[in-house]
Amino acid sequence: MKASRIAAAGAVAGAAVLALSTPCFAHVGVQPEGEAAKGGYAVIDFKVPNERDDASTTKLEVTFPTDHPLASVMPQPVEGWDVKVTESELDEPLEMHGRKISEVVTKVTWTAEGDGIKPGFFQKFPVSVGTLPEDADELVFKALQTYSSKEVVRWIEVPQEGQEEPEHPAPVLALSEASEDGHSHGASDDDKAEDGAGSAGNAAGTTTASGSDSGGSGGTDTTARVLGVVGIVVGAAGVAYGVLAGRRRTSA
Image 1 (tube, rainbow, N blue to C red):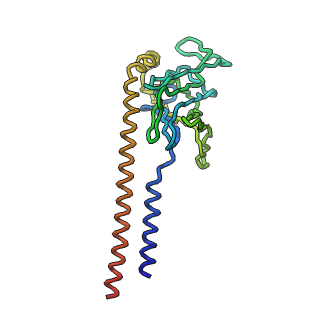
Image 2 (image 1 turned 45 degrees about the horizontal axis):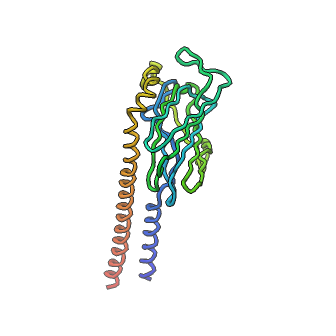
Image 3 (image 1 turned 30 degrees about the horizontal axis):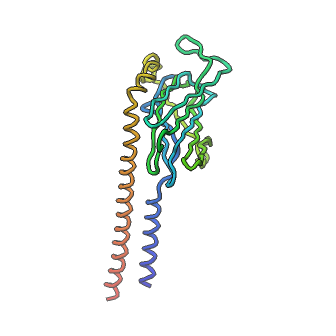
């Protein structure tokens, strides 16, 4: 009887350890560096984790929304990656800084020049975008992630409110309301236009650093998980020992 109870306690502890040690399913996502306010400009990061143990991510294709086209799209250089910008002609031209724009960026493709994103790492791909629409609460960017094994993961399923998250959700950028003065408190339109090339060149080293730091943060997360698992195991063992010792004293 005692042995069965101890075995049951061990099974519960083992299940808890398994639940904590299983890595969370990560998606290709998009987040602003700071704020992405309606009617303003923002730098957004496409975060790409490698979810395979035996292949590297070698290509990322991001399709930009056509229902809310962005007049300005400027990728920041990422060391070790070639970037290609695809433009398409609009049915109706956009007005920006007093001039009409008939073509906008509809896709940005990053292709690894080396090993790409190795297993256990992630990479950020920054892009300066604007102006953000004032009549939308979010922007959907569909993405394709290609591995060195030739596998292609299609992050194109649009999440629906009130429903469970799809298996391969598309990256969604939430837009915040503009401030009371009507501005996003980011860089001005003119500054952003100049910043597309200037910050891209100046921040190339920063992008590389973020790629390197990703390995560090990944290691920190792994260490935290390991320590958490060890704590659970030790705690479970202590509980089992306490129960066994108590029953021995009661029997005595």
